[in-house]
Image (cartoon, one colour):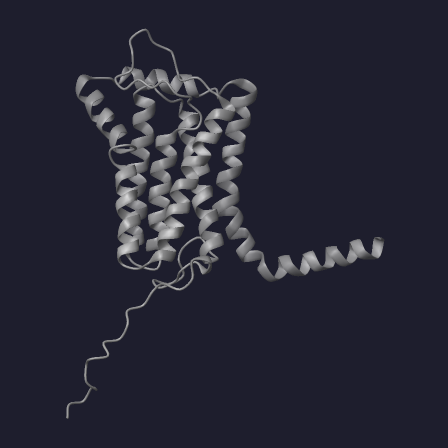
Length: 252
């Protein structure tokens, strides 16, 4: 038994030495966001939230004006039902139209999985929405609070687009513009008083860890290695049939 255990440990050591860079990258990109989510979830479960949740909500309340209320409500709307979800459907259909079914499969799993995780977590934690003021929120909600569905949905969309765009220069647009959009969506939910900041932070972390984990399974890394790369599970992308009626190149 002791010899078998030593053999396993030596094999494990060889495995880590040969792949330590990939393992470190996997931990940083997937494990760390999920670990942060776990820490936030534990605090919500044990203590009902974090110490900075209520002070940030009170600060956000002092920033309210009619114009800001309208702007934040608009950002909140496009961060889910009127923006993220329709855009995700358009992207999925577009990937199928251009015959990138493997990328479409990755995108669908990333988005649908994030939504399913969000609903499951909400039902598990059953955290009530913030209720700190007498006047109602400009955009009231009546579902559970933890984690934020808007934060998870917007992060899943941006992270999935960044994965698909990784071998191109468009990745920086996805990261910078998408990151700003994701932040604004999350901030709008806190500003409107319908989420605690920990709801939003947990949603970001859970969604980022999920999408990058799916990418690791699909592409073997956090981003597509090349523009033509496709998940093996989906099979090769269809290719156009050659035009058999065309004559040979080079003229008569």
